[in-house]
Length: 452
Image (tube, rainbow, N blue to C red; front, side, top):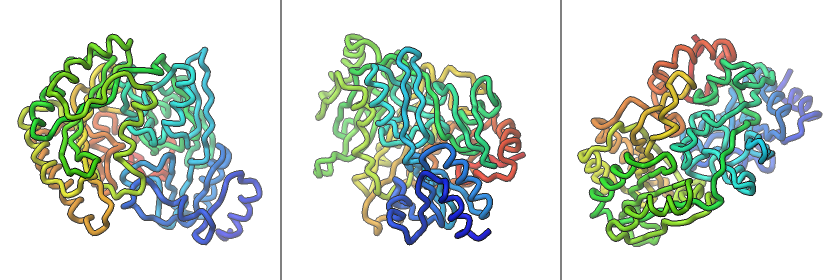
């Protein structure tokens, strides 16, 4: 069957949109968050429901087209799109149902965290979900799902109860502890390798709507002492508290480089106030925006610093220990940064997310320590080679301090086959499950696990 005939046949029942290059809306639909990624799919299937997703997979298989799956489109490596293939776009799939009595929520695969939080926070409930609220729930969860609540409630994937999956042959499967449990194990950290998450069901927890959070910032000249303070408080923090740090340029156009500490304490406000008091009183800071804050606002704190369409190139790795020498290296790297839009972010792991046994889910990032993210970001295409070089050079300079762990959601598109490193002791089992559910490696535009 020709592609035109196949499209015409599917269009009779498809409830979403099937877009080709000449169609209105194609250019907007093909764009992902990272402006450096500029791909043109042959077909974009903008799905409205699970049946649309299943039929889009069958169409791609019939036409022998590569499949990319776009949820929120935030993946820095551009894995949500493909040249000359079929993009399965979940963005129109926005359904969310909250069960406040059962403390669960089910949401479709195109939902963003800010949309999810809005519905759950109406009931004073939340689950771990992202540090940027415009990120999609599906990609973040399947790849791990770090967020402000992870020390208390684990990663997003630790709160996943079930998922409705569309497999490589277009079949619709449920993955849970009791239904296809091997698939359920694999999707919790295995990314998009095993199917498309058309909907996801989460456990919810009483959070907010007000928590203690926000940020304080200091001049980079005080950065060494600030990051030591951050390290020492992060290591000693209770499960209710997550701390992150950022080395960045002030957004006021002054060009001043800053070191910021971000906090989120999800316990009682009085406990949160006591927990952040030493951070607020250190310095004093040039900016103090730390205190009672709606959880939804906390989840959106970093949104403005990561605008859609900016050009991005990232490197990321885990530091088991943030030593004094590592702090000095981080500060030196940022002071050589060519773009004021770039930043270095440190996210501390401890508590519930780190106590899960490595073999309980596919995710292997189950240690205490600091995840470092080198976010090279710019708007002028003429700066591309310079900004990519800064990121790569900084990564090389930090290499002596790296541990073996890497977070798959932060890996850029040019990483040389990182799956074996990312999944470590779980890799062999993941390859076996891949062979069972996707023997032809249909879902390969991801941090790919090859069937064994």
